[in-house]
Length: 108
Image 1 (cartoon, rainbow, N blue to C red):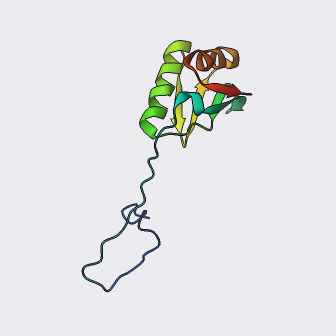
Image 2 (image 1 turned 30 degrees about the vertical axis):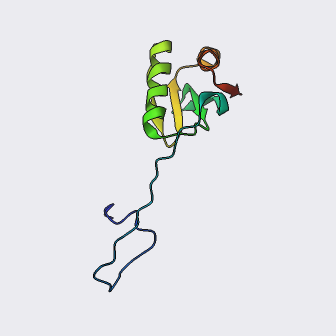
């Protein structure tokens, strides 16, 4: 299925020649660091341990930037998908301390 009509708010067809589609903006404004509460969890994915950081409220650029900082600090790989940051390895304590040093409130 094509993605070109994905964000057209349920409009299938319009007979109005001057109709313009209203697309939804998926980007949201990033909350300040002091207002964010991040949930840090240990998980096992594909048989390997990882740390998942959930509940980041902000746009994808800020999410990728935070992911990059954590990966550089820990010296491991990872990814940022659908508002979650996945860090490879069992580094729960190190990730949590890093986030707290940056000013984030953490749970988990």
